[in-house]
Image (cartoon, rainbow, N blue to C red; front, side):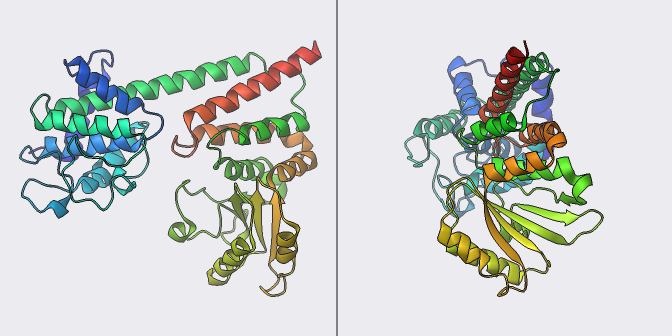
Length: 379
């Protein structure tokens, strides 16, 4: 019996040399696989499909509709185990456009012990996505298609989607390079560009990247750098981090400044939770800084400034995101384009689960517009 990892590798090899040729002859089934792979709203569906098809390919006696050991029958299995143990490493290895974490912890799929039949309402969004996945699982169960073929077809479409996304980014970068040169963007033009990007949908990861890019740009001047950024969906309790961005002195490990980002108003409760994290931490920090994209209440600002002595001389402050980056870019005016390049690279390097493809494309389009506008003024 082949191992699950070997089955995935074989499925990959089946399709990688010719992504145009479908694996599944039934056009309706193949179209449904494509729909699941391309759905922009929810990427859990494709991981569910991969995990279940892998399990069925690995052990043909299993019922693909029963990915929960709690069902208790001999033909059930742990879809989450297949997902976490094999699918995660496979999608990371090939950089496939999937969620970085298991589908079985999403609200629609966790804590279940039922057959995944087409009639089931998983109460997931969008409903049509889950209905389509359940229909595909039934196609395998009913013998209309082999699990191995559906696994390969799913991988084929994921590779197609990955290549399309890369081609769009490459095209936008190429267009951007055609307007480079001349006078660099002004600080205020960069601030406006960042502000426009923050105003896009699903931009909660961006403040983290803004602060990280600032420290990357000025690291040699500050004598400080940021630690590796934790994943977007990792809680501080899981990572052991004090905040979203942690700053250390060069060649040292102790965190001296911690940043926590908020896409909402910072409250007194937020500050109190930060104080508790500071007290429980082994790190001896100097500053704990909240960066928010919302208005800052004067009472919260005053509360933060009044606790300096209570927590042993540690500064806690709440700053506005745009004001923060405006001041930084004016202070390090000659590094403004270094910052912009660092921010762009951080945005493009983030997984789609943290910074979506439309958000990446939006930044490049906004930058191209800013560069083009500058060029017109120069003429």
